[in-house]
Image 1 (tube, one colour):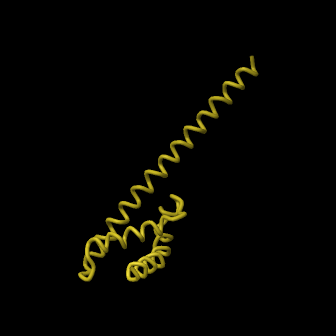
Image 2: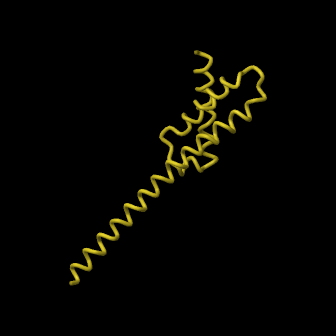
Image 3: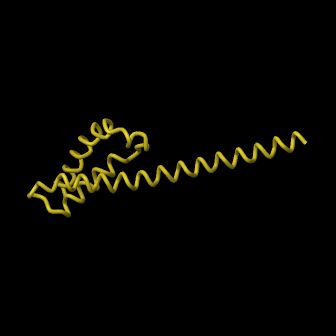
Amino acid sequence: MRILLCLCLAGALSACDKAVESFSESFDSAFKVNFRKSFIESCAKSARSRPDQSQEELARLCTCAADGIMKNATVAELQDADKIRRKSGPVIDRCVKEARAS
């Protein structure tokens, strides 16, 4: 009887672990989608004061920056504003160079 109870508890705990893992993956995915969208919108809004670039160019530049910052980044890293600021400078520079080259 005890063995059966232990097996049932082990099965229940395993199911809980899978549910938590699934929730975590869903949260991470949703966070990254929202982070990217918000970053692009904020970037484009702050760059609109530059009359030398069209909205389309700004959207491409901001999308490049968002994708570069998010590449290989964990949710915890994306939530760290200091890390994002440090990482964004070089990424934006790279995106500007790529935009000028094309």
